[in-house]
Image 1 (cartoon, rainbow, N blue to C red):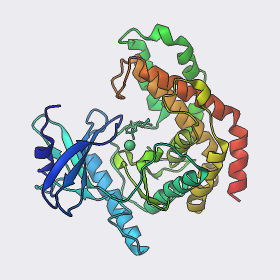
Image 2: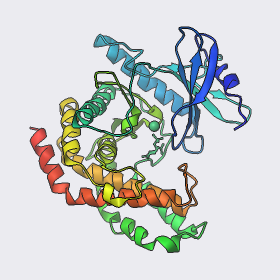
Image 3: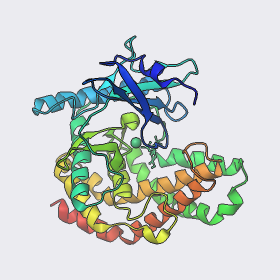
Length: 362
Ligand code: GN1
Ligand code: MG
């Protein structure tokens, strides 16, 4: 990338003089950097937002700002620190929530919250419990956000729309990979009706639509040094959808005993102890607002989101790897198989998940 990151950072209303801008983490979607400043001034997160995924970016930034402001008000009322317990978006010098560079790329900046820990895996039940409380608390903080958010990701967790994309990619087979993955394609097709019948309940309002985060993997949460959740980050995907997406995606990520792209499928399974711990924390915060129908489908949502993830990785593989950043030619296929292994283990443990939820919800 030839972009001058310091110049881009200079377009925003930062405190202090910029010292250096360096890459942070390896996101699948956006490019993320940290801006260090001289002296005692704060650090910042700089992101190039992926305009092929989120569209339009200005509306996405408005969504994020609405959610941040709403949470800040809640935190203040509860006597907390709104600068640490909610994200702070830093506007550009012209007041916009983003900067558009000469290559038509969108950049955004937020305050870096220091003295926090981001985990890549839920190593202990204690951490999973704290994460569950974090996701539940986030949902309860935004539960009364009445203004609708702009849908900048049409069909994100909507399996009906995913199937439209799926059918289209399979029909096009743009890079000739389809014939190699017939077995994997059957995994998707054999569960189509089951998944659609769940989504119908969201479409007809049986399962309510609320403000949801939609990308609740553990590294999208900042923990404080005592292991408590401080702040939920990565708000790009906040949407009006079912909150079951958040529970399901968290279970997909937290309970996996292997990696999301584990090549050794023996490593991959669903850890029921982590499931119980996350769910306990989640229900402590969320049970008061969840409806009976939402509770009834909690365990199913873990299967739903994991299935969707199998579909998305496989669809991207067949499409020629246009969506997710990949590190090898068959990376998306490796991810597909690892997530499918997780799905089949969830299917085996479905009754156990439901029993645990029943007990914890009492
Ligand atoms: C992406 O951006 P990141 O890494 O937090 C993706 C999620 C997937 C996840 C898979 C906008 O999340 O939906 O579940 O990768 N985000 C988007 O790890 O597509
Ligand atoms: Mg993220």
